[in-house]
Length: 467
Image (cartoon, rainbow, N blue to C red; front, top):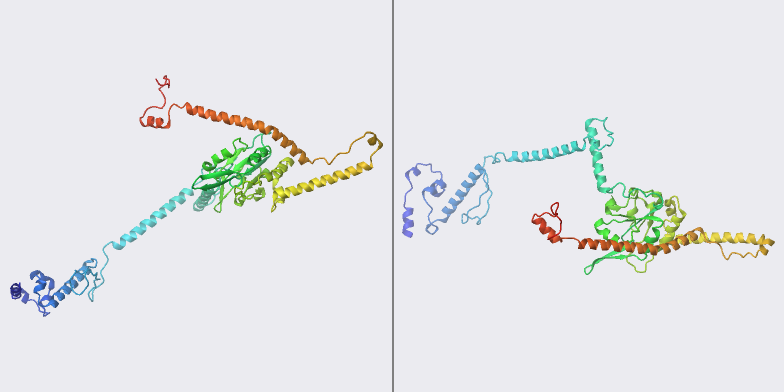
C-alpha cells in the first residue's frame, strides 16, 4: 500500500492543467470539482496531509451550496465525515456577496391567491344564492307587505321573515293547537286541569341493580277519578312519548285522563322547556296548571298552582290536600280562575283555603244564630201550640251540601265504573292474546319468507290453509 501511494503521488498532472491561471498554490483547491473527477481521492490511510482533504471537502460544500441557491433547491445536508461539522448537520446555504436573493419558484405565489379567490368566490356565491332563495316572493298564501319596496329591500325583508319563521319552528310546539276542539255539552267539563307527571304524580329512580323504577304518589287514583267529574284532565309532561307513554298507561288504566301531552308540545324559551297554555285550544280563564317546576308555567304564572316536588315519601298527602280547593272552584263555577289563584299567591293553598272556609262557615253560623234570636223574641202562641222543635244547628253551607252529594254519588258509581273498566280491559287483553294465537307465522318465519322471495298472501282463489 505504501509503494502504491508513493507511485500515485509521483503521477504528474496533465499538461492542460498547467495552462490554467494559477490563482491558488494548492492543487486540491484549484477547481476542486474538475480535479477530483480527473484524479480520484486517495484512501484516508495513504494521505499525508489531512488538511488538504478538509479544504477540498469545504470547497465542494460551498460549491454545491452556491449551485443549490442558483437553481432554488432546498438546503442540503453535510455528508458524514466531511469537515468539522457534525454528522448529519443541516446547513443553511448563504448567497455569495453581491448576488441577489433567490427568487420563488414560478407560479408559487399565484397559486395561493388563486385558492383564496376561489374560496371567497364560492362563499359569496352561496350566500347570494341563499339570499335570493329566501328573498323570493311568498307562495304560502300569506300577505306580501313588501311589494311596494325596491327589489333588494323587499328580498331582505322576506329573507328576514323566513329566518324568523325557521327559528320559531325550532322553539314553538309542533302544533299550533295541541288539543282538539272542546266536546259538545253536556260531555265537556267546564274546567281544564293540566297536571305534570314527574315529581307530581310519580317519582322515578335508577340504580344498577333494577334500572329505572317509577313510584306512584299516594292518592293518585282517587285524585284522578274524583276530579274527573269536574275537570277535563290533561297530563302534560316534558318527557317524550316513547318514555312517558307506557308510564301513563300504567298510571291511568281506567282512562280518567282525557288527553296526554308530551315533550313535542313544549316550547323552548331561553333554552328551557315551557308549557305554553295558549296553544291548548282552551279558554285560559278556565284552565289551571299544577306543576312542581316553575319554568313550566313561566308564560302563564297566573294560571298556576305551584306544587312542592314529591321525592317518593310514602306517607305524603300533598296531592289529596288540594282536592277541597279544586272542588270548590268547580262547584262555585267561577267565571275566571286567574283572580282566584292570584289571591292565593305566596301562600300554602290547602291551609289558606281551609282557613278561609272556616271563616265562611263561622260567618254562616253567626248569621244563623242571629236569626234564631229574632225568631225567639217573635215567637207567637201558634208556635207554642204547634210544638215546633228548634233546629239542632245551622244548616250546612252550599259547598258542604254539594260536596256531600258529589262524594256520595262518586262512591256509589265509582265501584260500578271500576268494574266495567276492568271488564273492558280484560276483554281487550283476551282479544290481543287471541289474535296472537291466530297468527300463522312467527317473526322468524316472516323474515325467512321475505328473504326467499315468496308471496306473503296466497294467490286469488286459493285458501290460505296449509295442506
